[in-house]
Image (cartoon, rainbow over the protein chains, first blue to last red):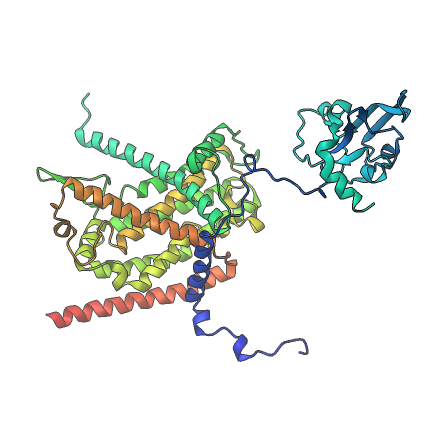
Length: 166
Length: 353
């Protein structure tokens, strides 16, 4: 009997509580009050959520005036736990000497872990704020360079966020 | 071949009533979803039409287009019959509900209700609602699914236990009004005050039992999702499911209307006073009939709101709690209510002689 708590008078239901109806009326009063409180719903397609810089959305390649930053070192492809990234390097006469001939991210595989961004020595691949990813077929889910390249101006917030931690 | 005028009028009345009832049920589904959303600080359906007003029609359209799956081991005849019984019974009750005072023209009374002056009025309502349990029980049984069967059996047991208290609560009203005819009941209430004043306990009893009769929360055990998947309509899809769903809401409106008629004075807007003289209108004239409709329906829909409100506020009873409440609490209270009412009326008549 050790673990049975004492039945204290104040813990027992009193007469009005055992009748239930006043308590039910109280509960109904509470729900009635809730009905007139402001709503939390976001009217999604009209009213979109704009994420903070810390948000990890679709990974993209940073594009500058003279082309992409990526030097096709292949680290992102190497670190990707879901094996979503495929890089093929090509040579260029520019100062950085290498560029990705082919850069594909399979968005059906991507798990938005952000490892590619973390490992990248050139800050060339970053997570964007893009979270509306819809594909009509599996082939469409594989994004090539044409869809991955995003001008650096649009990614400033994320780049600044990353520099806080480097 | 000449169609008798009476039959033609009855057909028109039936057409209007059935359509009104179905539209009302569709909007009650929307009201339910909206009120549920408001109680949970959400917005509710608002995409189809302004404020989501056409949402129910979109739902019905979807149900029509859905494949009608009949389980391979089910008895397909009874599987198809069950929703028909449910909706048929639900519609039949509307024949008895008087929506307004009759419009009197050349000494003949016209009314939207088909048989408001039925002498056994309230008993016919009781009879019809108890047939409704066949629809649910049959739906559960013919699906050949153990969860459906449990849902159907629960519904049958629940309806039988709560029907007793409901009948006894009605006896209280019948004793007070001295008639079974619903129209006479309302006339009496218009003259002497609403029955809810004379039968407050009876009103609460009827409200609780009506919740149980229509399988609404907190007594919605026949369709308790966590235990029984979907309950008796687990194996239904397409418009058959739609009919069962519609019948539930039609029953809700019917019992609300009966409650409004029996306890809240029906179409009587001002208690204790004669509406027609207060408003300066002639009894049985068209404005009075229209006002009667508005008053009666607003009372009925207020009660529908209470039904919905209760559903989204209270948790579901456990099965033993349900039976305890029905047999050990509601039944004795309703018996005492009948005895006390009878004694009071007896002594009143005894001393007034």
